[in-house]
Image 1 (cartoon, protein in one colour):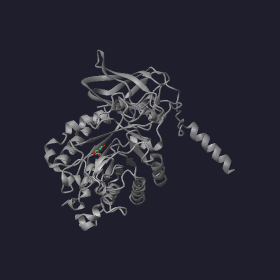
Image 2 (cartoon, helix red, strand yellow):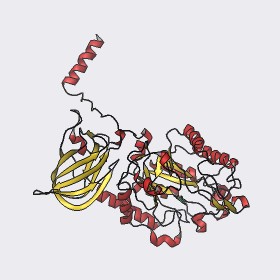
Image 3 (tube, protein in one colour):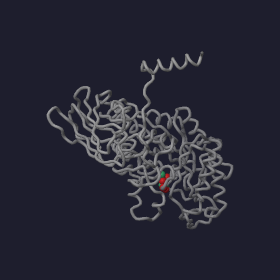
Image 4 (cartoon, protein in one colour):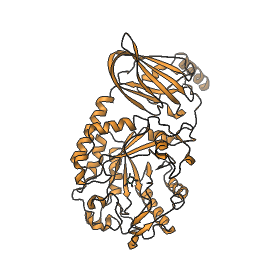
Length: 478
Ligand code: FUL
């Protein structure tokens, strides 16, 4: 009896239309991102924080012989760092727990070369704890940079150093998580203090660290972790520290085409590879100042709000994520200049890209993958919904709710089903003529195009070439 009632109720719901027809997904185009990589794409902008004895010695690469007594910030306030980042749109923080000089920002049990030996809080400080806690308080994700190269350690270059490095990873992951990203720096080997040896040491970067073993150990502690390194495996370096991803930017790459010293490697990291076998998106790391660490003489060289906005366009606007470094000063604060420029940058992003002139606009598209596709999903403001085309060449015509001047266009692919688009064009109709206002190659998670301002009644997005029929999640204009 109960069962019959249930069946009838279901039939009534579907007849009355309360039960929407499920949207069918076309087959994915491999490689596709993992769930963790998909979450990562949504972060878009997050901060690097470089802080160590260098801040107090004026260096960029500490030699490893710095006395912990130099580490003495007078007004350190982690809340100021993280609240500023929250206020200015950052979604996560990656902290240099240990840079090449070997000084640790937490009281590691495996070395004396830490803030426990510094005057800061009479040796009772723990900045990894403080930043991790502040991230939880403000709802930001927390990531760790732990330099593999250690110019302080006497045993750097020997097998025992790998045990030391792994013990520190255990300390960090067991006590300060959750950690969303682990940053492995490619800078490795050279001269250093090395416990007093003061010599040059070379290691074979591909074998010395046994990266597969180290990553396996970390994944057991933090299954959702994403590893960044020059070549991935989860996130790749973009190939420069200027804030620029390739205009053509594939999230795909074949790891074994990457090896140190290969000619053109930087370029390959910037563009990825259309035929790449793995999903390894690029992260764009760049500093708000010329150096990665704070130097008072660079106070006049903090990137302006406009410069930061341009970097945003050449990173997030090309389908990558932006990792912007803001180094605390000797007081232990983000400098006023940096805070001011961050606020200006955030204002520009909001003013220029924060509204959508296509909200709920009418969309007419050429043939769809199937009857469950609704072109209106392209302008519903929801990155999770999508519209799938039937053919590789396809057009979408959008009628604006009212004619408006357009300065920026934003296109997004539904990357859960793989990156597809190879070439596109956008045309605008001013009431008399159609003119081409933008041309591009790849789209990926997000492509933002700054165009010569145009007053438009309609837009036409033309996919000219693709690996497979496009699946787009959003089209926006502002
Ligand atoms: C580089 C390092 O050598 C710099 O000091 C900085 O940490 C940058 C993010 O990565 O490889």
